[in-house]
Image (cartoon, rainbow, N blue to C red; front, side, top):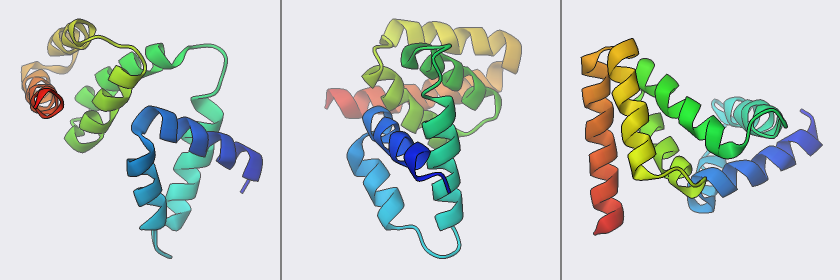
Amino acid sequence: MNQELFDQGLQTRREVLGADYVDAAIANADDFNRPLQEMVTQYAWGDIWNRPGLDRRSRSLINLAMLTALNRPHELKLHLRGALRNGVSRDEIQEVLLQTAIYCGMPAAIDSFRVARELFREIDA
């Protein structure tokens, strides 16, 4: 493991997803899934999310579309929160999800709209 990339990734992951969530994921890792947590933190968050080619806001928008396409509601909810932290507005989230309806299919977009509405209700409560 590259400790420097892991540490950078841990910082970025905390800033985007929230320290509570990330710290719990790391703390709850066991011998079985610890290698995955390390890989995600080092490669996804340390290497890719810190590349200079796209800002975090753009990466968040892309993730929302990809997670909708892959039908990953748990990860979508997590990245919706991250997108909001990265400055993406609810209107922009709506536009991304409308775009996914055309390219990923209506059922995928409907599920993503449902997840987003639930998250917005939680935030607004």
